[in-house]
Structures are given as C-alpha cells and as structure tokens.
Image (cartoon, rainbow, N blue to C red):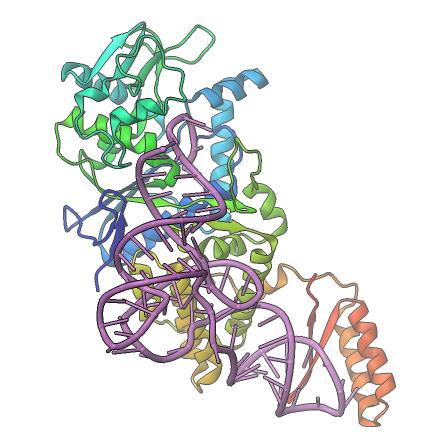
Length: 455
RNA sequence: GGCUAGGUGGCAGAGUGGUUAUGCAGCGGCCUGCAAAGCCGUGUACCUCGGUUCGACUCCGGGCCUAGCCUCCA
C-alpha cells in the first residue's frame, strides 16, 4: 500500500506521490521563540516528526524543514521587558525548545531555517510581489493586495467579500482592502530592524515561511504542515504570496493540519492562559509518556489532556517495557506490517498503537517471545517509542532504598527459612518490612526475586 | 452570522453497510501458604428523528449538543 494523507486543500484523503520521485519536501511551521513551548506546541512537533519517520521509511530522500521564528513582536516585548537584545530571548527559548522536543523523542529536522537569517530573501520576495502588482507600499508598510489573487480563500474556504462582514479587526486606514496583510513594517529606533527599499523595518509574520520554504525546498513543495489555527490566515497568506511571487499554480501540494490539545475541552492557548508547559510536565513525567499521550488520538482530532491520560500511558508503557525486559534479546526485526499500514494511512496512530499492543500479546502467547519482542521494539521505533533500555525506563520512577543488595538477600534467605518451617507470620513480617523500605518481593518458580517499588 | 470538525461501552479512543478495535479501570480465573507482579478470559457501545437498504453505529436529510477558525496562536 502507498502512503495516504488527508489534504486540507481538497478535504479528502489522497494517495501521496511526491513531485519528484527521488525526493520528498516537507515544511512545517515551527515555534515563535519567546517563551517555553506548551504541550499544544508539542503536538505538531511530534506528529510531523512521525510523518518524517514514516516518509523516510519509504523514500530515499526526505527534506524536512521546520522553521524558527526569531523576529516577532512578542519576542520584542519579552526582550524589552528584560532589557536585553532579542537574540538573548530567541536563543534561550530555541534552546529550551530543542531540549524539550528531544525529550519527546522528536528528531531534529533536516533544516531549521531562522527568519533573521533570511532577510535578503524576504526582501527579494517582497520586491517581486510589488513588481508583479500583488503588493503595494503605504505609509512605510508593504501590504499584500488580496484583490490581486483570485484564488484567495481557497484553502480555508472563505469568500473574501464575506470576511469583511465579520471584521473584528481594526482596519488600518492605509489598507486598500481589509483583508490585505503586512509583508514589511517599519521599525522605530528602539525596535529591531533591517534596511530595506522601504526604509528600516522588519518582516511581517507570513512572508518568512514563503521565503524560507522557497529558499530551501523550492517554489513548489510536497507537504506543508501546521496546526489547524494556521489555516487562516497564515497558510492562506503563504499560498497567496508564494504563488504570486513565483507565478506558479501550486505552492504546497498537500496540506496537513493537526487538531488542538484541549484542557477540559477548551483549546489550550497562550492567550487563554490555560497552557501546560512541556518543560514543567517533564519534571513529573518521562517524555515518552507525553509522546504516547500525544499519539493516542488521531492527529486531526482534538486531544483532551488530563492526568488520567498520562497515568494510562504510563501504565501501558510500563507493561510494554516489562515485556521487553523479559523477552527482548536484541534480535533485529522488521516493523510489524499492521503498525506500518496504520501509520501510512494518514498517520492513524490509535490503530498503530492497537497493533503494537497486539504484538505485545504475541510476546507472551508464543514460544518465540524473543522474536515478537524484537518486532515490538522495531515497531516502536517507527513510532518513536520503546527505544530505551527497559531497566533504565523501569528505574525512572523507582524509589531509593538504603539497603544493600547483600542485606536484602539476607532477609530473603531468612524469609525463605521461615516459609520452609511454615512460619508464615514471620515470613510476611519480613516481606512487609522490606516493602516498607521500598523493596517488592516476587515469588516465582525459580525462587524469590526482588525489585524496587514504584514511587 | 459565515466556515470547519465532532457526538462510540465506566473513561480514553479507532473503525466498519451484515463478523473481536486497542488501552486503562472493573470483574472472573491461573499462579501463590497468603499476597504482589505477571498471564489468560471477560463487556449485545455507537446523540436524536426520518429516509435509502434484505440489512445502518457505518450512507442521505432534518434536529439537538460540543469544540474550533473568522484577531496573535500549534
């Protein structure tokens, strides 16, 4: 089977065929680095990391670009508040983003372009837009003229004229059309800025993605991805800019949009103040648990975040790692076909996780547990799960104990003796004593073993 | 108001025109001196009203409800 992707542009699931059979180009909208990432920001990072893994399995060459927006009014604000240059802010939070995403098993993209490193390309693109009559200068700003682009609204299925009716925006007087958006805006002396044909200023938000995707992936790209809230206006504007600047019929051939993470069914967003910061969550949960939760719902559906979901993911991972500890002998194995098939069907992660759990059943059901365990691990790798040493995973949440191994063994021997003389009261006393000190005993056919209790 | 996506068993969450999702919890069993852990088994769920059909949770239409976008936002 081939890879199928739900394309927002056509609102249908389509077979994915790259423009160039030899290479796939993917661009995902990355973070604006003015603060720590919340779990809602982590969802696209994890989902499109998974896309990258799935594509890489089938295509020789996948170029995955995920930008960093490092010039933006919110960054300016944060910098001003601290009295530092914007680079200090953007560097700090870009580093934190990388650290947090790594903990979630997110691989680094092939390219991570930054807006401030592409100012010349941005300016050149704006000049082309002016030359082709799609943009105009007004009071130090350069604006995109939406009336010049008849297909405007195609992605978000909006009618340009109707949007004016819902004008909740203050319409700047210098705009020809309320829907016109800023490509370049002037900077006062206290704000970061670059020299341009229109004076010292800075780029508008949308233009950077158009300029950077063209610079690194070409004028027509295969897949463009981001959160659902970017469909309008950001992606709509990107399409307008890119197609006008390059005179092409197509900008991105497939558009993918992830649904929101919600808290108590409400969208998590910085403006609502109900954000759960990844950096904080990682203090309480392994990154892999967060990843599992993010994969537990289909990416286009809303995902309601809760402690219950975290506990459930933790319990499931504990069980799977326990299985690996007992049965995985490091054999190599292929990815389970059901897991691969589910993921290639528009990243159906719930079905893939169901298949993963079916493999787990085979581990205990078969005589050849080792082969099934190896398959479990190989399949987990495609999902970005189950790649730690089981002992390391299981040790994460274990309590500390003051007892030495020798002391524990000695007590186990004493209990064994008590059991042999059928003094169960004494045997249970020893077991309870050890339990109180964080040691759990497990009686099996080969005698008694022990392990540290979970916190 | 315009546009979009949803309403599935205790919870989470896939999917399908007629046959087991899966996970977590619960329940039963195996194991155990008793436990714990583990393993095995277990659930006639599909918002509502019509329609199409031999047959609909699955298709079509109406209704109700929820969330989102239309403003910075993943």
